[in-house]
Length: 531
Image (tube, rainbow, N blue to C red):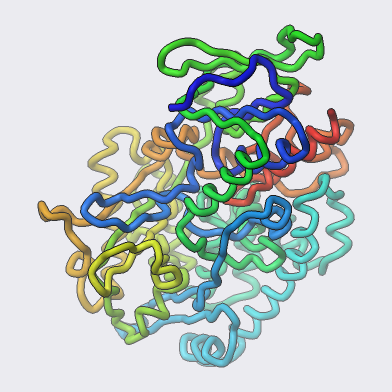
């Protein structure tokens, strides 16, 4: 825990020390503003941290957030961040069984003949791969149009729509994504691989009329105009460590152990400038400061409570993911015969055929744990062995992210339901392995398997994300419709609230979600424009 604040009044107070809060602090302090960042935990970083999850081994896992796509190179350059993001040599691998015969669909990061051959082996011709290339070329054009706008004021929807193919715009933006997937692709495996990017952290059918799945799909494919998911060298904690260093070097003041309890807009200030008062308890006494601007790096649902509103359960977001971290003595062998070092280097899809995804959603919506459980795994240590530390040769990490496991599934009996969900997740992996994953999992000295699982309720408890929702709520389109008000800097940057001096700066901002720094960057720009 840090000591109290150095002063009673600041230009900007930031509530929450996740990566977006640190980004905003670095930008604003560099611009010469006085900045105080308040974090309830004893460390900054939020979901983007590295942790020694298994005490007997020094390996530091990216416990929650684990890959980087949306962080713009512009932010890295602006803040002189000392980080390295490495490409994975495999984009994805999807093991399958056809009439009991094992196989696997390989997608290289730079697609070549091996990818085409893999599609041909699965489907019997080149038609499906040609359809794949045509679809993702169109999506790539959409990503190339949207990505440069993410660090600028909200662009007009009409301008972006005019810049891309009308059919791609209709497929991704106007109609449920499932329609395009079913029209463009025939194979159930291929359809599922396309559909998974729409469901990571989002509980929906691919035919949901709200299009929340379409928005999730778009965000997963627009990072830096390529959508490539990269591995942070040194773990996710290296990213937030660099952001913290940048903020402190610029002069931002950071207090940990400072859980904010109240934000009071328009409080009287010594210079009569208005703004807001921020109050917290440091474990010993109540404290408070005044700020001209308050940036909320918390979910909008939490912000409303801090502003004096009720804890409205009806509007509380609901997360829908199961995160499992494992430490292995060695990589398991696949029944397909694929090289584990190739298959596990990218995203390995499990029980994510198109039909399985829709069936899992239907089951979970009815209150049942899906069986089989859809999810995906990847091995961070294949790309970055530095996170392992001094461990026996052959040791590797494995990260599993499960879909369609809403918080409501675990509400009545969290521990028993969590144990069932973990068993089904690992069973979906075992189906494609020569030996069960249990045979290669490392164990602590007392024999406990090195397996750590987190359900939405635990994500909420650990990170103060309501409902364990990793995006702080449903994602929104990263542009302004014709009806969007753009009268103030906060509105133009997509970070406004009902209070002019209180701005969103986290994943709940208009262009939030994932490890991107966009919420922090855009809130900082709005402050600098408004001051």
